[in-house]
Length: 414
Image (cartoon, rainbow, N blue to C red; front, side, top):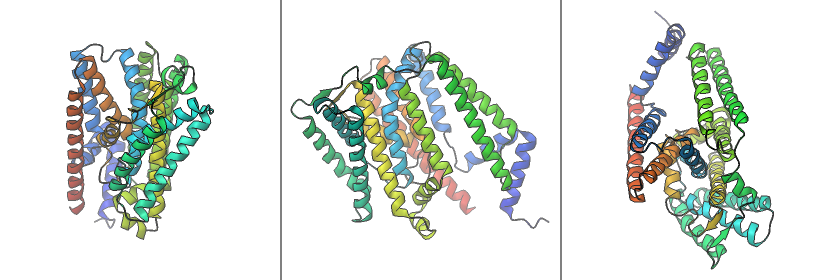
């Protein structure tokens, strides 16, 4: 009879199974995780495939290279705002003012750059500083005065919308010069075809290197890990998929630099969440703030970083949205920007209850929402359908998250 704890026996059994059976072992482990409530990005990926299939059947233009280029570019601004939402959701908080803050930031840049004749870099820096101050304000209201983030950000939604209207003035709109870097970056700057293939190869190689490093580290700690063959197969599949996507987009205008910037932000935040002490603290606070405090984590500092980073990313997303439209006006950041950013983070897999999620949630969720909007536009259907469908998808995502939490809890008790 073994004297090792049961969990060690299970991990070692999983490791031997996956090393000896390869794909079959990995599939067994995956199915076990799904039964335990860890569905990961599976529902979103299945949803994207279903959306693509349905809209392509109804309108063959949907998956054309030209439409995909526009769809991906349009996703970037809201996707960056959704990245900020991921940060606050991970610590179990919420920011309902991201739409107003994005519009307010765009208005600041437009007024300073166009009306006050500031250098665009200085105008962007000024807007970012204001955004960081907004995040600091929310942190103070939460930690010093006990104001829930829901209430604080709801008041911020109204306040910063009013400030946006005030600084835009009676004209209500400031047009950005088409020859400015802000507009060209959001609309006209595309990666050379050869460089897009190189970047795709680098991304696949980095994925393999990261996976291999994780595999070696887990084996040294006597933890279960997937086989090297499976890692190689996954990396090669990713390489083929990325190269094909670049080739297909290059049939039209190609890959925009704004898309590369968005992906770089995702990778940077994903590294910070999964590979740094700050990221582990973020997840720990979202899982149980009191337990995190007792374990020595500075919970207030974690809240501060989450709120400031959320406001900063919201500012960047608002500025890029203004560059995409070549204008900052009364509608900037209004409408469905606020709810789309929050919905994108949740639909992508970030839990509303805190402690679970990733930077890739923003990418997946934004692609879902943008795909729905693009498909309905091609079918000449009004926005009422988009609101209804997006709302239903959000409800399904939250329901899946709730069921997954219950499943994990029941397996934990077992």
